[in-house]
Image (tube, each protein chain N blue to C red):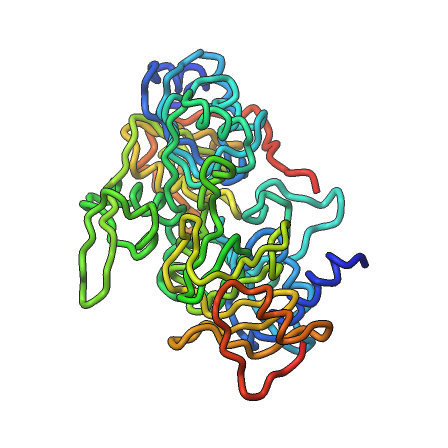
Length: 219
Length: 225
């Protein structure tokens, strides 16, 4: 595993531990998808796929793909026992109506008010929000899964987002390769830091004020 | 009983400048046969309403790449780079709508509702120009009904009354599109006699369907990987 992969695994492993038994979870495309591989043994969670089902399962073996069953990224997947299919209106009723317990998504920027920007960079990348705005507005808990800094080494956790927002004040938790940060009414609380870093390093790489928890854990 | 027609006949009323809804999500559930007929017909300057523009040369993405669309209303265009190029060059006007809002706007149209109130998009660019209402102490955006002249959708089984079964993840927004459009063409892998499709398995009631077409092109939406 290269360094980038190790960082990703640290993030998704920690997020997987956060999901309680019985939770209904929607995982975004990319790094969040990997969370499914690290659910602790004995814990059962169900995954919702916003294109129309609950019970998202692993990719089928080569040759066993069914063009009628894909995930929100268009890849062939499977459905687990106990799953069910529905149309878009039902899918987003489940999402918007607060029936999805957790959504895990990537971010371009997130700020100390829990604002999230993850769907466009004006003039550069305008793919559309897809289901992200509904998920962030509707899921009971919103977990951001990302690298702590961007490609240029600049902080992605800011005092105030500069990019167009996906949603206002909806993020509950930010998990990065360096830190586990809870968004609270009094601001961002640094609850845990990664094994290979220090509080000073985390603060240096964060563009917002961090309140360091009394008992700081490692992950 | 509904009329069973060729794909060419089913799309013959679509004109340059028509508004057309096309079912499918990342091409899964695209009506490949009807899209092909629409491309062959040569209609242009269409307003296309669809979940996403899929991939460049597959299903609904072909309408974009072959310059048939003047206005696009969709929630995601990122997997078809041609959509972004045409948006940036100004060749195609693109309105991006959150996925759940798109579904609900179409449902509102078909259900005779004056719109949908949603918290999605509050405080974002999506809020611009929209009425905000406070209901029981919570803010919502008023999203207006969205209809179309035509909808093209795909079913696995359709009986001659137009009752449709859409399996697995192919249902997506096709259900709402069938409700929202004035004229709805469905292509089906199997067209059966009334009674042969279990009424419990009807995804879309036949009341919404205008014309039935036998699907001749197979689903080819699988993304490599």
